[in-house]
Amino acid sequence: MANRFLRLFAVFAILGLVAVGTASAEDCSGTITAEEAMKAETARYAAQTSNDFAAMEKLFGNDLTYNHSSAASDDKAKYIEAMRSGRTKYRKMTPNSDVTTRTYGCLAIITGTAVYEVTSGGQDRTVPLRFTAIWAKRPSGLEFVSWQSTGIPPRQ
Image (cartoon, rainbow, N blue to C red; front, side, top):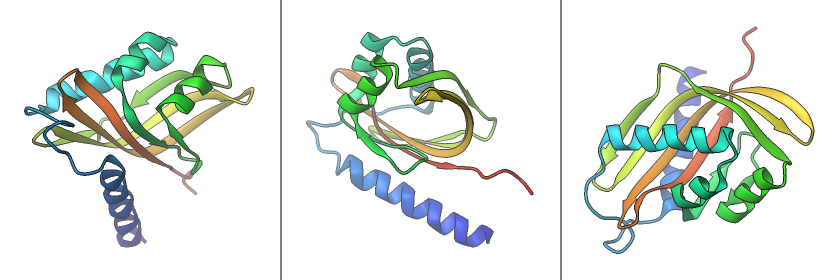
């Protein structure tokens, strides 16, 4: 079962990279560090939990693909609009201690688990999830370009 889960997780990570596309010189530049990526990810959490839409517009790449744990997929505009309209509210976003960052030139891949407290469609939910976040270092700064998450079922 664990082996099957790891294979499935690897497939989603690869799909996330495909969603980002091949980084070319105009898309990505310089070298991103793990510390830069985690600082940006923390800033994203702060922006989303405080409804700081100006910060989200700056942090999120125009080519963002956000794949929710529900299997819904949003682009940048649709994702921000869901928060701006109040349909979705991230009350708390808590990464766990297993979060790791790997860097590949101008790209950083952050993986781990987290617990999100979300209000969606008027219903409060606590969502434990396993995620992959991808950040790109671009001339304008670091940009959040891809997210893939899978809900973690309760232990039995």
